[in-house]
Image (tube, rainbow, N blue to C red; front, side, top):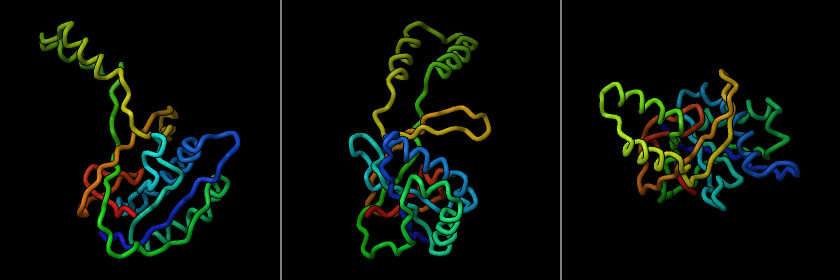
Length: 189
């Protein structure tokens, strides 16, 4: 899978929204387009970790044809231009030494604790000590940058925690409908 080109969305400061809220809106809009590329376009956040946020830039990386097509779709859609500057498609710089994997980090909450209790109770393994350990582990949300998104199917709001892991070599794989991956990396520049 070629990662030869990229395009960027740079958040425009909004008086009534935080930068994280703007990025959430942009990722919600991208989620409508990325599934059409069958896992070939990955996302990077060059400002990842700035003040525990994703920063103000979303970089979309893929082959030239996919990046050009996505750029045209985003330009025509209109729901991006109020929130971000859409930069032209460009070549990924030569000699990249660093790569990163951006993946979803799942945070388990009270509903997962209830399911675990039901499952372990049915097996006769449920104990108060186990409950206390699980509660302590799951009640503390991860200290990772995140987005607040809305499910298109259920209309429920959910938190998408994003973890960055740096690599010295590229790793192949497919990307999700959010441009994230559990195995694939993107060039970091």
